[in-house]
Length: 107
Image (cartoon, rainbow, N blue to C red):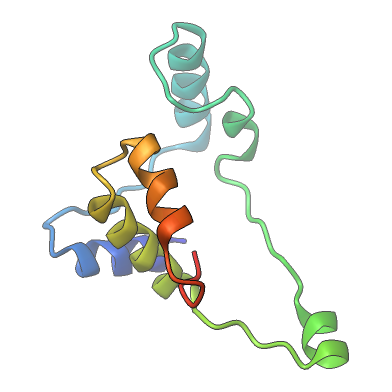
């Protein structure tokens, strides 16, 4: 995940750095801010923080001949560009942009 985030930072042309935080400290902070209503994340996010998640697409590749169109880095960059283009998180505009998007755009 570090590599994906560093790729996104490079794509965004920022000077941000990815910093590691001890998992227990991060989870405690997430739970506290969620309890206080200060976090946009749900309480369940703390359950997933710091855990690796993998999706095996072998069966889709072998049985269906499917190949992903985008790498993880490309998907993050595309999502970032979409976020900027749709009003920096203004969800009504974002939904309208998805509905109006040409069918060849994938998110």
